[in-house]
Length: 170
Figure (cartoon, rainbow, N blue to C red):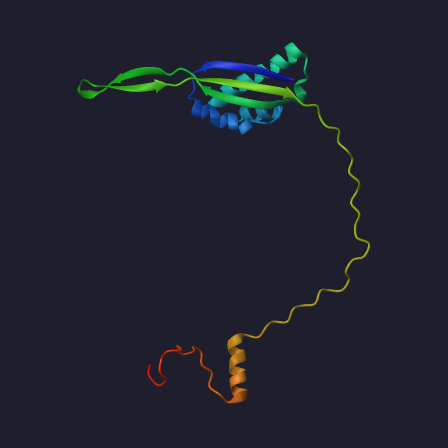
C-alpha cells in the first residue's frame, strides 16, 4: 500500500532539494533517514521531515510496520517564487528571488523476502600439484634478422625502397 505526505511552501530552492531527494530515492525509510541525518546539506532537514511524515501516516492511519516501509517516490516540485528588490547605486534596484518548493514523499510497504539458505560451495576434489610450465621468451625480430643475414652472407635492408624510385638515386 502506498502512503503519501506532502510538505508545501518550503523556503528552499527546488534545485538544492532535488539533489538530496535523488540521493535517498528507492531506499528503506530507516536507511534514508540515517543518510539524511548525516548529510551536510541544509535541504536534508526538509526532505527528512516529509519522509518522517509519510512514515507516520503509514503507521498511524494504515497500521503498517515502519521496518517494512520503503521510499517509493520522492518528488520536489517548484512552488511560488517570492520576488524582492535590493536598492543599488545610481538609483537603480536589482531583483532577487526567494524560491520555494513542494516536497512529496510516497512510501510503500514491502515485506522482507524470506532468506533461502544457500548450499555450501563444494571445492574441487583434485588440485594441481605440479606448477604450470613457463613460456619460453620469443626471439627479438632484429636479432633474428641479423642471425639469418650472417648465415646467408647477404646485407639486410631495414627499409624497402619505394617501388617507383629508380635504383641508384636517393
